[in-house]
Image 1 (cartoon, chains in turn blue, green):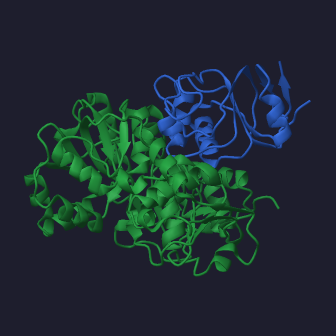
Image 2: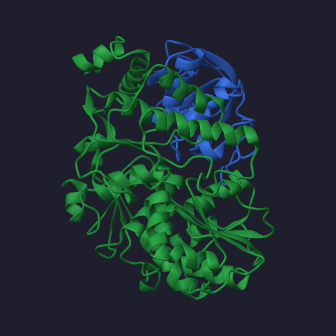
Image 3: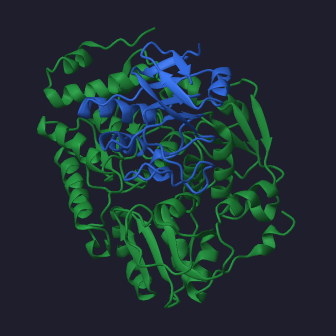
Length: 136
Length: 422
């Protein structure tokens, strides 16, 4: 069973997976009012992150990505969980402030390269608090 | 080794400094754990990106801090906000956003932050010295602090910035530490033709190219000129931080931790070397241009906020000519630079030419520009990257000379001669 390399934010999530094939900046890359990807240069432009488990290589771009993640979680249009190849402090800060302010937890795990490649073929994912990941 | 907090940190966490300081210390210490810091470090300053309104969460966090009695304990500058308080009539958004934007500015000022409202705090006085630990957010400011000033900040996001300012502490990890500041990836520009390397636009295009390739690694540029002016290093860093996650670069002969290639690499061999070609820069220019139409609607300069030197260049190139009546030319800058150029008489000259100066905010983050018919042109790779998504516009990247000539003529003119054979 795939396991997280690191559990950056512990929590539980299940949902359909959205594989973001390139790094994304949540600010400027995501419409904070709808949860739709608006980065015109991103391969997944036009996709919705709402309720999905995001699989992405890394973060990128703006420091305001933290507040955009907090805001979409507050508004109920955030991702269910985040699985990354490389840790991104900007997203983790947004997630931990959502927990502090609103008691909303979005799990964030990192995975090694082989696990990342395996997960990229999955349609749906369950993230468990102990870091195990089940695909479906 | 897990994170160890000292007695002062622990006291704040326990609530000895009040609930706001406890919240701020939780944010700093939890971020430190994610960064695998073994302890926190004192900072000498902070730059607060969180004063841009991105919805209710942007207000809820500083309000919680302010209600808990928080005050910053280090000099703290404020980033751009959603409003231009010097030219409030420029704002064309809704009343709720305006009122929330203003509330945010007041909340952060109330906690003791300086009302600088600029993404280029390094163009202010009191900038940090080499080796000083700071907590800066705003992607271009982070890369400038690390690369050009030699100060030390990690790639921080909103909320951590103000939390560090309130506690005076940051995680001692990442780019705060020598071992993570050494370059591992070399970009050799020695083979780029002279006619391209002497263009100002070379720097943002190179930054875009590097940002796309470097991930979280620290790159070093070798084979370029010595003593590159600050505004060009700023353009390189801003482009790389928008296209990628660039938080620090070295430029041999120009940045303080890169007197030589060997010094930038810390004596270790490079993990990767990329030879930059004219075609790479041409591709960057093409990626930053979404339309080939010559129909020009608007020109925006000053992302990051223009410096006095950059305004001097505009004054020289524009030379008191009139901006075409069908085109708007906006230049974004901070209050302190706006004051300085007013004293030099440049604001009056630029306004007489039809230039609109924007302070405190930026044309790509808030509704300021009037309805645009035609392509938006910019000398900023960062603006060109974000504007199509944020504003729904087509963009064309050009040099500052091309942007100004286009604004005067009322259509996009670009000097393609230098790009032939690229």
